[in-house]
Length: 161
Image (cartoon, rainbow, N blue to C red):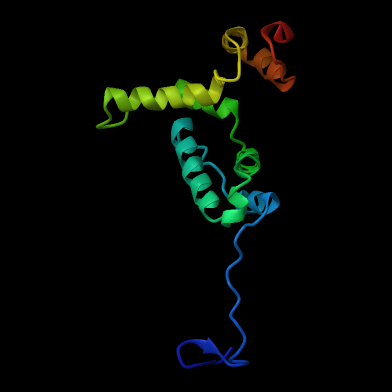
């Protein structure tokens, strides 16, 4: 296309140039995050941090009116990016201290992942205990049986057994 002056295309000078599309709905948020895939070669905690950075960038791109429905937007993005309790559990279990990180910073990161994984503000201590027992039960199974049990998505250790 030919241009005139400072890179403006020929044509109607009164026409307002098209602005870039900004996600404005939950569906747009899901579409925006579709291209974001975690790097499987990176440790889960690093992949989680990369996903979080991507999530923050996506949320910043939303119009102010859409940010009012933050919970729905957040849920859609987390679902699309496949971030769930298992993601946080893996991050919690694989975490290691970073170079130059203080003990308080490490503790803060651990606590954050713990809360996102086990959600202690919304679950009873019995429910949290059941999740820990289920995790340990699955860890102790032989690999073939573990895969089979996980495919059936048990919610309790009793269901898994």
